Picture: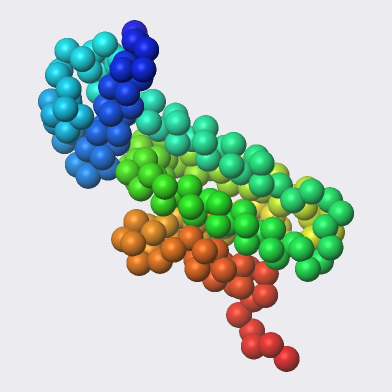
Length: 195
């Protein structure tokens, strides 16, 4: 039933999506009302139904957008073979900065997709599998020790991304670059003092 009516229709639809994301993130799915979404978007309730069949439909679209964008970011983040040893840390840093920036670009969408949606667990499981696949290929390229279980490493990355996003980024207490640097320091260099 989704309808587009030129530039004005696209703008109205975008306003509805942005308002819905903010409402869902702040109130949760069950407490969010279509009347609140349209009021925040500055539109009417009938206009909502021009673009979405239901509250569930707009919520699913938001979750689907989050999931597909995250999938694209991780799929494009695999380190190509042939990097010099010094380049690996910098590339991993760049990948983590990109992920953390994505989570901060739309904090409402991140809260929905990473924490609130019933599919949040499967989104994180899919993300872990994609990261594991990247890590296995990078391990075969010699970037990481062959003794590491990359499934465990991927799960550690997911836990780290999720917790730091919740504890720092969603509260505005950190920035993507600082957090990425700390994660690279921990994962790539460890916690033992340098000798």
